[in-house]
Image 1 (cartoon, one colour):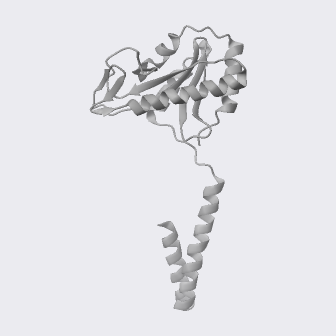
Image 2 (cartoon, rainbow, N blue to C red):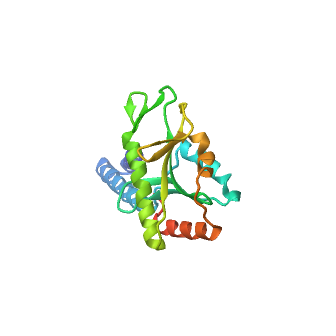
Length: 211
């Protein structure tokens, strides 16, 4: 749109001042120049990943846990894939991967053995993806650290009512987004501050920011 307006304007000006042939040439040249400029601008400025409303709500909750010794990284990419972890958290109770989900409030959330539904729609793919992301993070961090680190996967759902407290489905903890802090505090593993710092320093290196 902008390219067309600029090109036409340039063509009209040159046509009025000179003739239509030069005006047509100016129109083409202006369109080419704008295209080249825009392409260079796009390639030199990375497109930052804009967090969703659900992710921002989880981030606010995680900030409230900083004084309790929890550290968080947001929007971290899984190398070699298009997947990313919304929030990777390490604290006194363990290491966690949280996917923040904003779902339609008009559809109910239901569970069956090893199944999760939002209205009529199966969410098996989201559970599978969340479990896979946590597994990849666990393997990458463990390899770099030299010791096994278990990363617990989860879905924090915002919007519709989740009719349970915390439920594990296909290995993924599922709960309402309002209970992120409660879920994190329920872990039993005890990590010292030095361990938390080391784990997160490594996580920051092996899980790059998602752009």
